[in-house]
Length: 233
Image 1 (cartoon, rainbow, N blue to C red):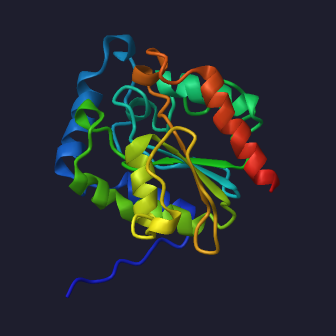
Image 2 (tube, rainbow, N blue to C red):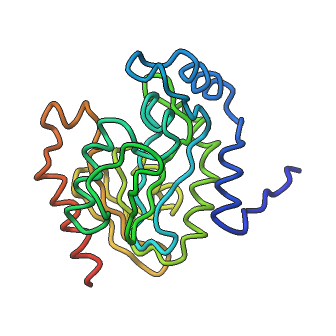
């Protein structure tokens, strides 16, 4: 019989457990290899090259869920959506919507503070080609569930991309609750109930989406406008 794993008592302990994780050998090898090889532009920097914990306001009322750290972004800086094109698109939008004190998130210690928002991801290690396997996603699910259980004030979740959206639906068992399930679509909303917060879907602010025009700044601002509207209800 498998032993039940107890959840960490607080966010700090959870952060320490995430950073020490080596459940996925492929990802551990990849993130560390990237940290050694480095990108030419960052050759003089020391890469984080460990699992990346969530961060933000411990009293957050909105949880933001992405896919995974970028190889030369969060895997380099050690903070979610920091130091890459996705973060360069995300943080200005959060600032415009009143959820961040500044529009830049470039390095740890740059003064960025999130207001009422906590940012996390489905997977905590940078995966090759930005594609974690199903088993790797399952291995990280415990950490996402633990975060949700420790963030006691969360009223809503913004899921970036189909994988993050589907994972949130699994966490709250929405795939089987068909009367409350909605297939992924940008701007799609699952209403809250006594068992789960509302879930708002958005295209991921990845370079692939933003540079092709699939996700524009105006479209993204509409997501955060909707978030603020939902918080007024």
